[in-house]
Each structure stands twice: as C-alpha cells, then as structure tokens.
Amino acid sequence: MKEVILEFIVQGSYVKVSAVDPVSGTEVSIVGDRKAEQSYLESVATKKLAMVLKKNAQVSRHGFSSDSF
Image (cartoon, rainbow, N blue to C red; front, side, top):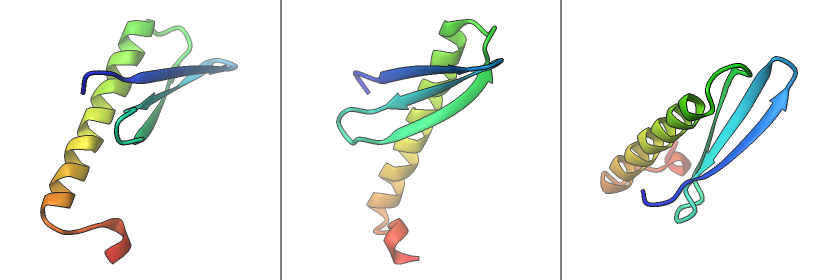
C-alpha cells in the first residue's frame, strides 16, 4: 500500500478517521478521542485498512465473496 487517503472529522469530544486505498477504493473508519495524537489515529486507521485489504485478498484467492453468502 503506497498511498492512503485520510480524512478526519471532529464531532464533539471524538474524531472519526477514515482511511481509503485509492487503488481498490476500500475504506475503513475508526473513532478515537479528539485529544489523541494525530499520528496515533493515522497509524490505527492505516493498520486497520491494511488488515482489511489483506483479508479481502485472501478471500479473493479462495474464490469467496460477500455476494456468495
């Protein structure tokens, strides 16, 4: 994953962080404390995106998709 698009939306005492892989269009979100370090929130969102991309790649290799259930 060479590039990740990040979006931060502050709502009251929390912040929603969305991470998007521009190649696949896969998007994940996390919610964290507004006072947390931006680098920490970026790290958590990026790691979650990497986990989802890895899971999706494994599912694709085994011939399963969410449409088959």
